[in-house]
Image (cartoon, rainbow over the protein chains, first blue to last red):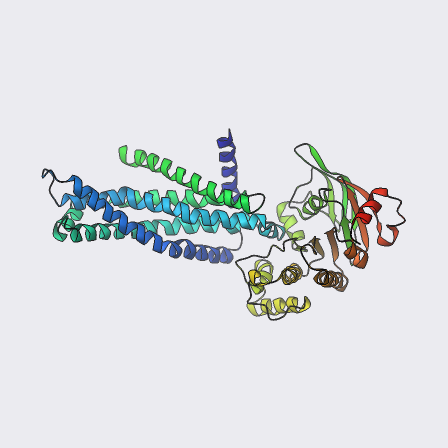
Length: 247
Length: 242
């Protein structure tokens, strides 16, 4: 029952974002600020995770390719595909659900409990449109770019661990990267990243915006935002894979 | 002038405002007093449109705020300034940007005109040279002054102050009171003040409304309070420090 109540409120919240838009100039400035916060602010953590994800993927897949039945260079192919299809979009977005999601929810929650949102409403500003829509738009624009960046770094991380760990030669790794490349794999990853970006920013903003009470409730909203965003990412990961790949 | 006519509000069946009618006059400090939980904050939120009333009318001059469309309400809202209990300054903006915010959103002023107006408002609240500071760098009293400066930036006809002295030391409280009173008279603003501070009330109150358990229990000038014969009001006054 609670799920349906949340789902109904979330839908109404999303519809409310598009009512009574504020001035384009103000909206554009807000969006650019949010892009800087979400995109540039997440650069470090995404870099770190991507390099290590690629490196670990190379080691783990390399350990399993000892039979000699699969050519060495296929390691590069497996690392590429596992990172492009799954690791880069999903792991990056799960991390961003924690970092960006909690930041959005706590910012919105604090603004709510300190009456800053009321101050906007009294001025006649649609606070959801002014505060939330730029965050969603910024997320949808920057998170896919971060995912592309993550793909590149994870493949480089894979190469580093493969070559430095003497698992595979650089030539074989590059040959593997070039083998049977399906351009749609990048398109699929971008579709996932865009969907996840929308889910993370909107769910987190929804939880922050509904905060009532004080500091304790802000913390609770932040936790709820991360949990619900992560669950939504996992569920939509399955749904999109089933719809776009299995069909 | 603001007039409330028979407003009612309930939450989950519990009546919080029960058939309240009252008038708030321009150029006067109109005080709303009552115990915690009596409904005075809900009444203020209804008056500024943060909460919709279940029944009744709220007139800003000749305009019934309750039955206006969102866009029509927006026009009235531009004439409203509000000083929140916790000031509600935007943490991410500097003092200058906080005060400039309504000017940038609702006027076509040039950046130079905006800055001039911001500086005027800061001068008016006796707080020059703090433009580039952030709310976290300010004391409680300074935040209240910046809150007042933001509230008067658009030259409001109506000023709402929710517990303007809460959390302030007695000296700063008096300074904030004097400032609100001066602005009220200077710009002929209809000022509505929610408070528990009886010293404020006796120093600057003009028109007093006493709310008891969601109902208007007494209304009149402060000089009439002691002879009001209203035992609940007198007990409330007696219980205060003043």
